[in-house]
Length: 394
Image 1 (cartoon, rainbow, N blue to C red):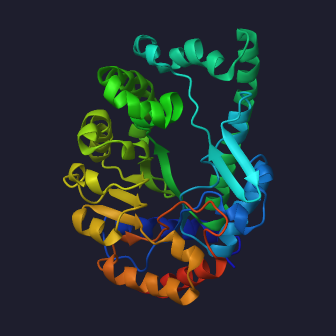
Image 2: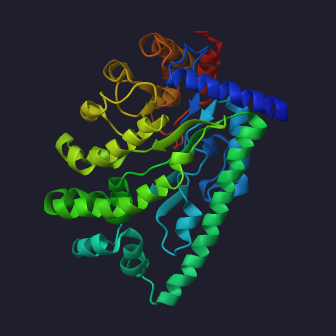
């Protein structure tokens, strides 16, 4: 068990862990051992027999679950503290976006969106904020009046405050009581991601890529005026105080819809702008690459070395290590093996990856999939792998 630390011990440990990560990402020297990052969204609730319907609505329960999870496994950092899905916030609008079941424990997201084909001109003209409030809000949630919309917005603001309070509380607890640095200080969302996840959905976006190409570009520009503006409000001023690993992050997901040619037009200009900013400001960035990124590697191979970490889901980590030597590889360890294999098989796989992926000390252990389902991980397998990796001195 990894118990809470005294204030002095926590300060010392968080500094040591941050330095360990930076040794790897900045390639300052070969690290003493492999840094360990948890990549699970909701499995920590399953591991502790907490019902999704209860845990996802109770921030005290979430806080306790994350603390117990850290005490059990002793990770050096976490990709998520159960904050990816703002369930209570979404529900406050009166039309739930998430479908939660307890038996079996699952969380699904609906693919219903209210932006219509004919809305493109209004989005480009008004900008994303005004467009959402004037054109989409009442339509999507089927409000009968502006007064009804205002009442739901008040509830949403209160839920967002509760959510932000939980985020601040759990981040502070991990740093101050467990000596665990936060993985990232802030993030930037590509406009295409917002477009897919908030406006059009997977089906309509796939159709729009053929029917509304130029309108989509205008929409991206309108969306990014807001997103980049928010990012610029704090990103240039980030100074690592020793409590986080990467300065910023981005989470590409929807890019898997795009062919390389489409990616170059609808995604890369904004992604390149973000990467250029990181390099110009001598910062580091964490890229959570959901899906497969293999057919987009040509865009990443010339990026500056010693500042980018990338967590893979579906790609071969050995191949990506070879083709992206300018990136620090995160993850690649098969989550399916943690859930279905034996202890011996899991440890053998860790030994194999130490030879094939971590041959130069430029690897951060994590799972290749976000563990969020029943049977996704066996406790004894995960403990054995972590114990083995801690024991190996590089």
